[in-house]
Image 1 (spheres, rainbow, N blue to C red):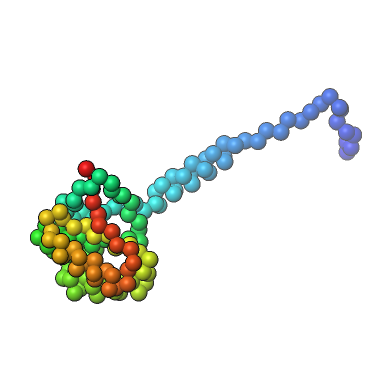
Image 2: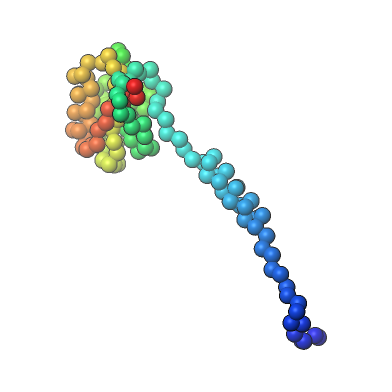
Length: 136
């Protein structure tokens, strides 16, 4: 056994290989990019009114109610009546009242129908209401 110390002039260089670390970081990045859910507005034919200032952020917890040009109410890709919508909103409010109800109304829809939808959301207990617009 050689227990002698090494000569004073000799030095051992330590090299840390970061290649595996970079590989793991890239794999995590790809994993999170593929598993992220993207929220988009439903594919309902609605001509939104134009506004100079529009906020296009929609959260996953937001509730979207669309009103098309014929005055049909659409909730979760299904046409519903105003009474059915009120019942569905009350059911959803039991789970969480913190969500925002976004009304996507066609610009040709009568104002009274939009007010009825917003009133149903308020009656269900939602405190945050928004009307969807598109930028000019």
